[in-house]
Image (tube, rainbow, N blue to C red; front, side, top):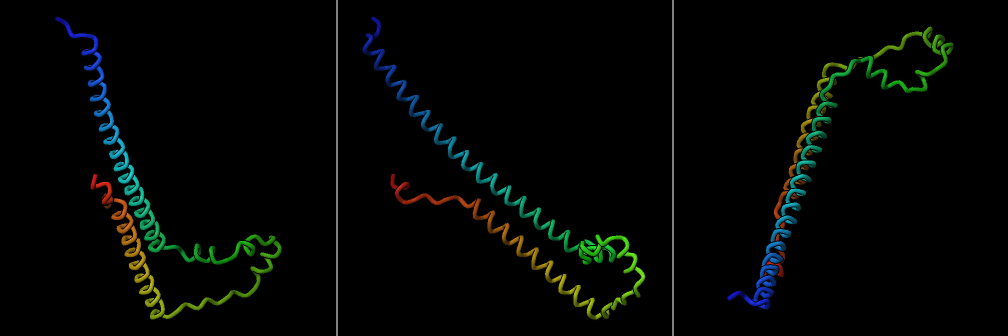
Length: 148
């Protein structure tokens, strides 16, 4: 004949236990996947930030600024904001002679700038690589977790 109510109840109980076990496995997989995606996202963020920093440093070091722009930055704002009467008086003063360094000194300056650019780039790339490898390295499981 048909199954008794006790047998049906037992089958329902076993089915629920089986479904609970499957849900636990799926939850653990989702958590581990989310952690992995978070690590990858962090690595991408660090990589983009490091790249932006290197690009900015190279841009600042390599751009050619006009003499007028460099002089404008060298003169303090307080002098540029003098009242008109004072600035007219200062304009009538004799011109200041500008001494230009020899070509040897300019070459030395360029050489040091080139060295500084190379060192800064190398340092930035090394730091970005170290940070990325640390983030992307798989974590080792503890001995107690492996023993289970």
